[in-house]
Every structure is written in structure tokens, then in C-alpha cells.
Image (cartoon, rainbow, N blue to C red; front, side, top):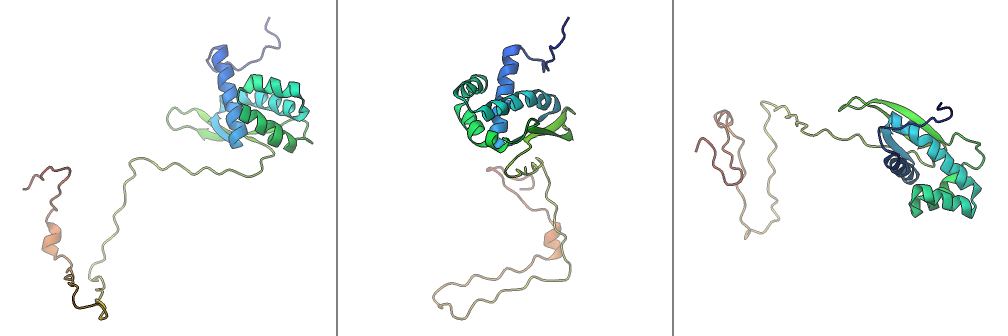
Length: 188
């Protein structure tokens, strides 16, 4: 019988799963909030809360136990010095899972896992989409751009550049010849 053997396996071997969860907890300690799949967030939660409980004890044995699990000295130091003291009056429930919806690529349910007693709220900027096309600005017909007159204070020795005139409608209708990387256009 397998009573009291609840464990989320995540489709990994035991060593791979332990390393994954330790890295996730270290990222959670470092960044205060991580975005991951819902299944991984639910698997990370017990380990993260166990580490905060060790941090609240603060003994040398607790620190060595946390270091044996997490394997990163900086994460253990931040856990014991920063995160555990913030949760001193709390008796459990140090993390929260916020569901985000489904990922576009494989439709996996995504979630944030974060500390309940976070100091500052970390906002993520939405990633810009690749291949986003720029929209052309509508051309206003009948209005000409204002011409800038050269200042009279400039010395006469400098050559003045001729002011460009706006293209005529016939010139706008012709396709422009473009040269990229030394290749000639088809119309040349």
C-alpha cells in the first residue's frame, strides 16, 4: 500500500526532480516571484515552505540542512537573513500561487508562485511579439510640410544646402529602387 506517499513526480527521475525543485526554490528566494507551470508551482510550494520553517529556526543545523537541500550559499543566506524574519509571526502558508491561464505554445496551465510577505511587488513587462509589423502613418493630402528658413546669422562662407521639394504625384507612383547588401534591384 502506498499510504502517505504523496509526491508530484513531474515525469522526472528522483535526482532530476530534486535538482529542479531546489533550483525553483532558489529562484523564488532570489526573485521573490517566479512564473512556472501550475504543476511545478504546486510541487515547489511544500519545499519552499519547509525552507522558510528552517530559516525561522535559525540554528546552525537548520542552516546546514537548508544548504544541503538548496545547494546555493547566496540563496540560503538571503533565506535566513531576509525572508524568514519577514514571516516570523506567520505559522505557515508563506507562499501563494496565482493562476495565470494557459501558455500559448502547448496550452499548459501557468501560474505565479510568490511569497505572501513580499517587500515590493515585481511587475513583469509583457514580451513584445516577434515579427510585429509597423503600421504606416496616413499621409495628409493637400498640406505641405513647413519649410525651415536658414538663419541670417550664419556666415556666408558656409555652403547652403538646397531645400528639397516634396515629390510630385507621378514620382510617388513609381516604385523605389532599393539596394540591399550590394544586390541590384530587378528594374535596373
